[in-house]
Amino acid sequence: MLVRIPDVLTREELVECRTVLASAQWVDGKITAGAQSAKAKFNLQVPESAPEARSLGEIILRALGSNPLFNAAALPMRVFPPLFNRYDEGMDFKPHIDNAIRYVAQANLRLRTDVSATLFLSEPSDYDGGELIIEDTYGAQSVKLPAGHIVLYPATSLHRVTPVKQGARLASFFWVQSMVKDDGKRRELFELDRAIQETRVAIGDTHHAVIALAGTYHNLLRRWSEL
Image 1: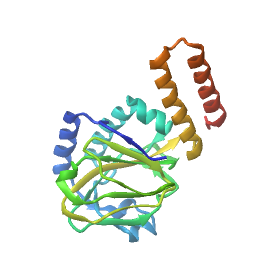
Image 2 (image 1 turned 90 degrees about the vertical axis):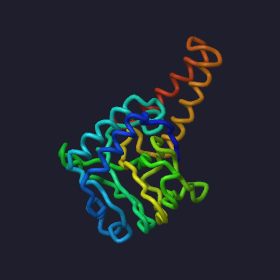
Image 3 (image 1 turned 45 degrees about the horizontal axis):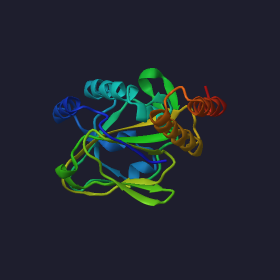
C-alpha cells in the first residue's frame, strides 16, 4: 500500500528543519546502509547521533503522533528515529530493498521495518531529478512531493532515487514497525477506516451501521495485531 500524506509539517517546522540542516555536519550516507545497499547508495546523511538529527526527529515524531492519516495507514507500534539525507547533483540511490531489521541504539532495541517513509523537505522546484521510484503492485510509481508531505510504502518494495540533475534534495526517512505487519491486512483496515469516516459524516456517529462497521474494524485489528 502506497499512501501520500499532505502537510505533515507546518511551514514554521519546515523552515526550522531547513535552517538546522543548513549548518549540520553531513557524512557519507553509506553509514546506515547494509552490505549490499551500500554499493547502491550515493548521498549524504546527518549522523543519527548528531544533536541536529535528534532535535529535528522529535519535531517529526510529534507531528506524526497527531496525524490521523499517518496513524490509520501505518498503525505504528514503533517508529525508528527519523534520519536526514541530502542528494546533491549527480547523487542517486540505485534499486534496493530496505533491511528487514534496524537497531535503535539510543533505545537498545531492534525494530522490524514494515513500512518505509520519506518526508520531503525540499520543494520539487528546488531540484531536478531525484524522484523516488517505488515498485508497487500496479507497476513503478514515481513520487516527488511538496515539502512537508510524506509517502508511506511497504518496506518490502524495491525502490530507488533517480540522479539529481540540479539543486539539492533534502528529506527525512525512517521506518515503522506496525501493529499489523502484513501489508494486505493493513490495506484492508485502512480502506475500512476511510469508509467508516465517510459514513460517519454522511449519516452520523450513532447510526447502527456506523457502530457495526466500527466494531468490525476493531475486531479485525484485535485479531491481526501483534500487541
